[in-house]
Image (cartoon, rainbow, N blue to C red; front, side):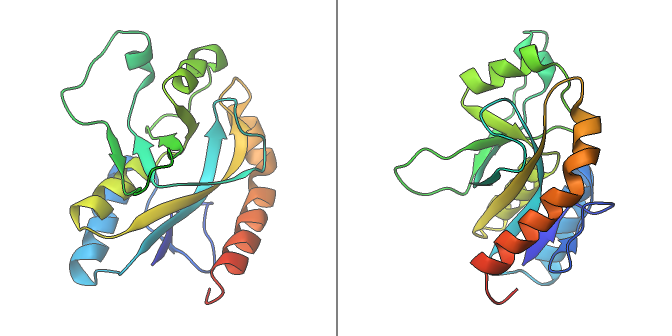
Length: 177
């Protein structure tokens, strides 16, 4: 099953399940309860903390849920905030998720020091639900912006081209799509 966020981030081959952590959690849980898929693939856009360029395609099976307040040491969490369906010896790229889009490039460079390279609003919830149902899962992302003061403007400017690039990538990699 291939899924995406929804709203303006939809694909002809993917089921939109909601924007942000809560909508994704609720709707993917519902889908897994009523008709559990054999595999889950999330397709969407991502913001780069600096290691990836605009329109790069990136794959991952690991996500974190770390808020900016954690980076400034003004918050903590008692819950496990990293989830992965990755198996293997090679280190997997980590995609951070939050219901907020980061716009402070200097602050988000701290994510890179933690081994976190991208952000996407839904991926943590997506992987956490997949993990709960023991369903193999991963994500494919196209970078639309850097996490700076121009994040939204750049997202809007690059979003259509990113969707086209993701569509071509998915159709080439998964021929049955």
